[in-house]
Image 1 (cartoon, helix red, strand yellow):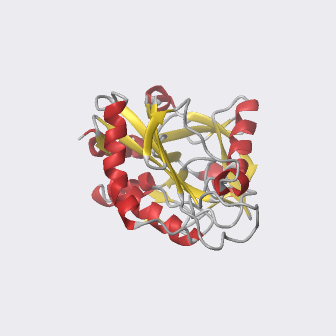
Image 2: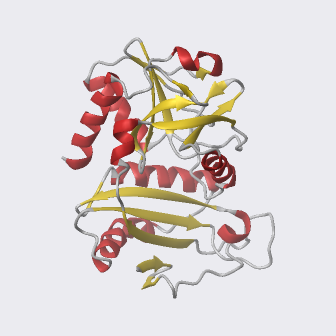
Length: 282
């Protein structure tokens, strides 16, 4: 598998990153994952805008020529790995770069950021979209800048692993008595034909797919309330679903071993799934 690292296309086995890279030492960087369908990057512009916002938040200065080359690099990487047909995903990571000695302050003078891209085949979780998934509730112990898509994903990883060890698919993360996100997706609840979701803030990552769901809701005249779902209100919902780049629109049907709603994907999530497939596959 060919990857891109700091100006070169190399075999992934030959790609090397310094132990002094700030991403390795501090998790000092951001990332994006973009869905690809038959060589077309889904919502590429939105991913690049969020990338720019993340870099600005971390005060990582990426040269314009490098930034503007990312779309071309992405397509060349797909071609080199014979992934222009079917489905794929592109992973992009940018760190502050390599600096020595290790210090908690930014390198002075500044160093060149490290840029890494890889691609992989992707298979949608089609069956789970039909049946729904089971989850547990967990405390949201992440930092309070979840709106920045950084590579610091240890709390997310531990939460997802805890869910797997409990024999379920994922988790609902709860902070101050309200549901924020899953370890890797946004969350929407449905009550009386309306959507409820956590308002855009520093406590959630405003996902690209979340934005698509909001567009679909407007098209279908589904009311949207940007109100957090309280933990004690969870089983008063009619439906619940995740949204994410590699999650798509995924119904949640069982929480902590108890059916939510009917225990099956409901009509609202099905209608949103149908419209989302149109967006994704044209």
